[in-house]
Image 1 (cartoon, rainbow, N blue to C red):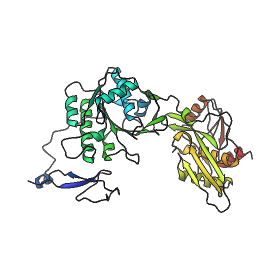
Image 2: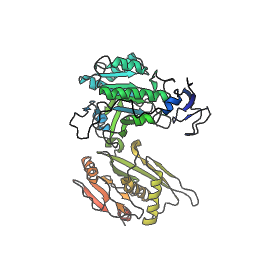
Image 3: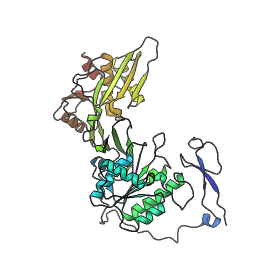
Length: 454
């Protein structure tokens, strides 16, 4: 009989090697190799032909008239928006986030609302005792919800329990790193255990039509811990973002097989749990009566939701010969350097002896190139100490030639700005707004001349 060979698996990237070494050759992490038992192989198994002896698979066509999986509304509109309109029956969702960000709180609230809607919901905690979950539910005001709670880490025990009665509509596993499968060796949290446990739970979800939500830990870099294949196995990957010192949280879809990945859900952490934020623009705008130099309002777009954010710029002149600093928070530093170069080359402004600091208010992160014109307006305003009108929004993409290029969904952005009381917009030429006055600019130089009153 062939003897099992030991192998060493990196807990960071999942690569395997035949001997232990201090540093993983694939990802470079130190002391991340853990010994695991490899499967027993033989000459017969290696040469076995898999083209016969199996069970025939039932094949269908795309135009089959059978019923499609239904969407399960959780009762939390922001959560349903992020996952594409509700959880899909039989799907697997992986949600990750920093410790203490509110993952368990959000899922417990969603589970309670679904249970109150007369759906069977099972909440399995591998990190807390059942009484601890009940205590948190009472603090959140959902202690009377008929959610079935259990504390277990064995996947075999969990699946045996769920197989005894009616399959639940929602199964929450908190967290997947604490689950253990007795089919393979290894401690909970290792690459092989996480992969095997997730595979068994996802198989149950597909067969029973249960929506399974897996809570995942994150590394110090913010990535979901465990093998990368875990994100490929599930249907939806959600990231719960925010600073624990701040009140607001953003639920963002990184992967979604049943919807878009550009929708977000915004929540506020309060004493009674997470509450939905109906108007996210109020989080990222500063309330002031008078216009201040160095600021510009940009109508960003997250999926189908416009969000108005404030871009802040500060410039500081240095003595001749000093090296100026460029710093950007919430914005790409390389794009900031490009906009500064265009302002110097096409508009005649000098930033050679000027330190530049750029910040997106509220901790928001922008990657939309439509924010170029707002960044440029904030920089010119800070340099000249001339304020952008307080009732104006600015949007447009800047080319290296200085041309202001059109942006996507301009009408939707301007409609949101008008709804929030903004009266005018600085946008690319040809853009028309409903209920808001639009000043079109074909080049960045034209906007600079308009702002400086040339």
